[in-house]
Image 1: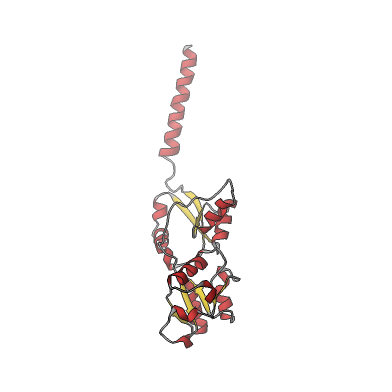
Image 2 (image 1 turned 90 degrees about the vertical axis):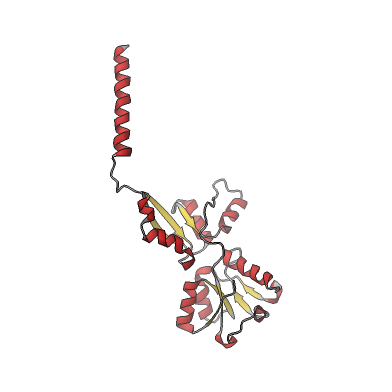
Length: 212
């Protein structure tokens, strides 16, 4: 009995020392690797970039790898497949996955923006005084159906008192291809984030209208 008590005691002490060594004295450079799937590069995600480049995540034991996966649907796929641990995108993909009765669904737990940061871009022949009424009868590249940019654009139309039937909303082009399609001559207006707007300015000398 004494021998058994000695063995149990020795094992207990050994486990305690192992725990102290592993958790208390392990290399401080050991960090947890986390892959973040980012829907797009945007100044609207500045809080995330500030934390990343100032080493705030590293200070808290996290080693972040950021991968670009254009479109919330692709972000959701990356997380669900295990290619990414966390997704940075709009919440629409979460709703679509949940509504499909998937057992392994996504959970939104934080936010960086309160609004969708997009701009409506049109030809400079419209001069300086833009009005939402100018969209009537025009073709607008709004992004894919069900995506956050397209939904926010439709909401902006509603808030401006414009019936969706009065505008030719083109949902045939995905988010990543909008600027290229517009430069190629498709659409009278295009719905873009700021980095793509810069591309339009540089290559096409287009006029920017802040619509949202």
